[in-house]
Length: 482
Image (tube, rainbow, N blue to C red):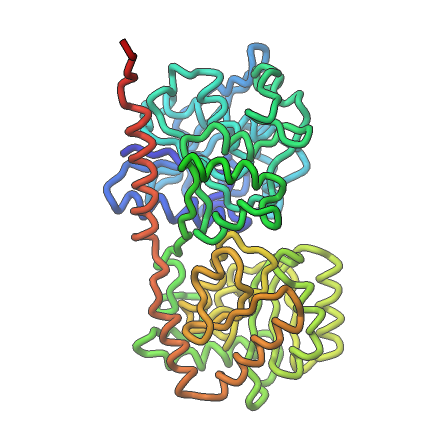
């Protein structure tokens, strides 16, 4: 099959979160299954100028937003990418993005209107026609709408698959967005693109896609409830009733996240030969300026600082955590939470370190050098951190939600709690610390985590089945009743 991925971020070229990891690694897995997969993403200035990618210009296209507004865009391609990666943009669009933190800037929906139109102009510009267009998150929500409403004949035989990575981010804008895309205002109703008085880009993608996926089986169930559905639970139940909603667990790029080959850590190791983890532990403590404390495990956190990630629970239990373990936190986000971690560090200088920001070099050192990985999320559509931690022999402590509940199992490869309270979290931490002091049990926990199935192979097969079903339905002849 010929499959076009459309995403605002793609690892390693531009990354903010797990979306980039999926958009970068799932296409490689599908290509390994024999499919012709291509990726289109915005032409960010930082990507075009990075010498690692050897980006070259291969053409141009015209992104037509409406009858009175179109923009020319340059097409670039990443040289020697595992699958073809195209970047579309201009001096006006995306060129000023010089680092990943600026990808989702203050410019509203207009950049993504442009990107959506450009993505649909790309196949003709490069002389390649997809069977399936796979869109991701709200930034690409209008791609299926444009396919079906603006040029229904052009795209009649092409399936649209849409993946929700985080339902909390929906892209809500005024009705005038329809005017800018040359679409009729009649679409501004609850059956099409409207939700609670706004044009909702995520709803639009879900409504018009042939099939909607999300990133874990548990999250697909949760988003059908008021507690997790972010006011779209009714739509999610409707999609499920129609057989148009699936939860497919994300996978890891096993080449990228591999303690046996990772160049960022002090010593390489594996499930068969885990001795190198001790050197990684020592290096981590030295890097953050902590001395080892007998009997105290190192608990690592690599996260966005937000209540969604449960960082309010960590701060609420901070003093008790510091008595039980040494805590190393790498993250950026909510300034109030960042200030809280700085205060916790100031009161516990031999046991707590807070590293504000994100470092592609430091994150692997925390995964490899920690004894435990804490991920107490309020909700977690899938989560990759817990899988990376387990692959690096670091049992996770997680709350039972979303993809965390599909990957971490109490006493088998980690520790799980249910209630969203500091007390419930600390009860799980106490169980983990007790297990850490039992060498035989700890070795089994580490080994179970390191030998888990985290790759894309089986997950890619699940996406194949979705693509094949949708493409077959699109390409089937229409039966006219006599």
